[in-house]
Length: 153
Image (cartoon, rainbow, N blue to C red; front, top):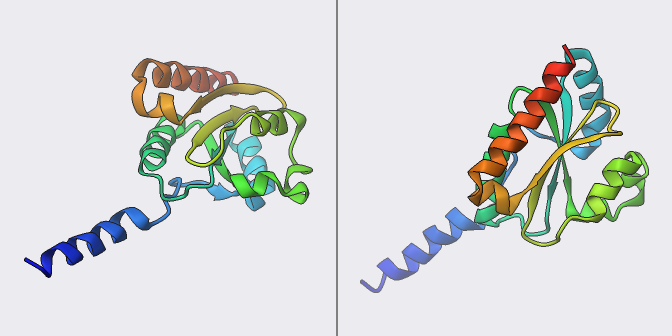
């Protein structure tokens, strides 16, 4: 019994200690390539913002729901909280994207914000709380994204 408890803590630490990833998303430094891809394939661009807490299980769950909501309609690019403070990165972003990033919560957070290919028009946005608990909000978000993508055909 004495050995079981430390082993259980070790396994729990392994399971919950790792950073979550946004499936299929590229890092922000690949933004130009992703924008070229969306223009060519008639898709939208999704800026995924992740807060400082990269091991948040709630954020991981929300990120998984967000990926499902935009699948097939967008190409996703991830920007992390620390990168938002990097002027070299944010200077390359449009005013619409910078405005959205300035309004994001910090620490344990993830959001999906979908834009047109030029990143001038915010089509839809959804955050961690809705992605975890609000099926109606997810459905409305997904419908807006799909409708905007359909207009590109």
